[in-house]
Length: 396
Image (cartoon, rainbow, N blue to C red; front, side, top):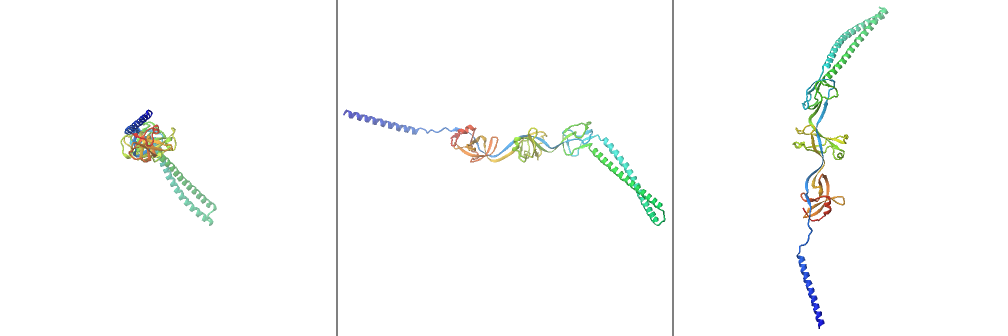
């Protein structure tokens, strides 16, 4: 009986232990069910809003304001400068007198040539009168010879008498020829003298240096009393009726900048809207010594009055432009396939959105993809993209 009692007691102890363990397990399960569920902590990210608008790729330059036309004015003859009628900065009209040269030698030459012409004209008049008399005498001698010839044929005069008439006719012809030659010689001499006179008068006109067009004097190189010589400028004159901007292109820019591309001009003074837009007019075909190419922009509008020729004007040449969705360049993450994605922040999580780059300029990118204007996208450096993934919980 004692052994049976011990067994029953052991069974009861085991049952009590099992019941106690079951109750402890049930209580632990209730406590675990009541405990809060663990969730990962959202990673903080920097975000930017997707914008909608226009984006342009531009190249910036510093251009020089130039007059559309300028020229150095030099005399065409050598002479002493008598007077200068314009100074630096003077506004002149087409035909205005700029300088006067000493014309005394040319005036004396003109007077001498005119006197010679009058003398030769008098000689010509005498030659013409002599030629008229010679022709009249020739006609008379011809009639006499014809009469003597007729009489000779009738045996009315001797052969010597007819021969004498022929000699007189030949002499009259010679005198007529000489008279006509004297006329031609005098006429040729007059023509030569008139050519000399025309040349002298042309040279006389060169003693008055006048403006070929309306403009302004930029520089004056001489003073009254100086010796003027061909090729040695007296003035530099510029046409201020129109202007242009000139800038230098480096070789790398030649692949992007072309004539006709729009230009945004940033005048340092207030201007009208039409004065801020222009286009590249021409690009010169050869490199300069500093390995740059000259480019010019013709201005269709008047530049601000306070701007002077030679002023430096900032401008931008627009080489490409487009309209659409714009994100920061730091919002683009590369893919293993060579493309790009943007992480849009939607409902507190990252959503990888594939995009195509349409245009990039500095730190802004025009993209095409399933994005909406105004929604937030994650931005960051390359190493940050390595830690990000699609569906990641984030906070901004």
